[in-house]
Image 1 (cartoon, helix red, strand yellow):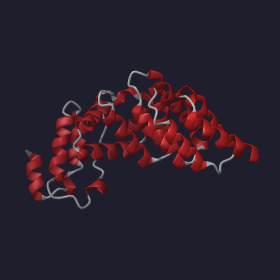
Image 2 (cartoon, helix red, strand yellow; image 1 turned 90 degrees about the vertical axis):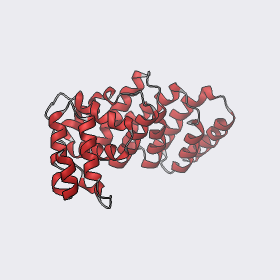
Image 3 (cartoon, one colour; image 1 turned 45 degrees about the horizontal axis):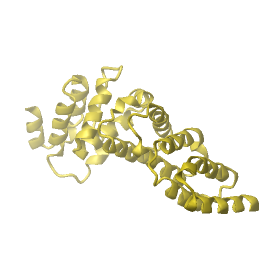
Image 4 (tube, one colour; image 1 turned 180 degrees about the vertical axis):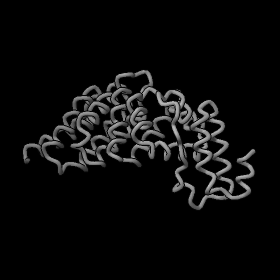
Length: 237
């Protein structure tokens, strides 16, 4: 442990003074050190913050490899620092996107919901030309095994009013193997929202899911029992 502390002190000095060319190996090394001595969390986060200011494609790819291989060994604080870096991915780097696909699946399967929502939204917003369908495994898992989270995302993304997120809903349903995806409103997100929100969501469903008729109708039907009479009148038209 004393030896690891000394090594870490040397690494910290190197990070501050060395060429960025060494950052790939240093990042791998400090994650390896953490696995041997896991009371280095604060120091690891500090060094990662310095290293990851450099938005290099190779460095981002190494981060994706680390999260794919070592996700269960990292505490959430370190994990989230690394995860946030992946929102800067180059959309042309298919290898890195493949790793992100696996990482999204891991978040989904382990019900790490809030991290999933925030990361995926930031990823799509920062890379508005990136199609969500590049993440094939994630989409398959979401549509076939995690319908509750799909409903949360659809409602969340419609409420966001962001075109890039509305488009993502459309892409998920359009390219799903299952053409009979029965969506439903996530009611928990509607608490304390003003009257008219159900009518707003029904229009979003019609707009973004006009080709996916069954999904659109199912979503709108799920709004009926929580809509006011005035909203129902608007929905019926």
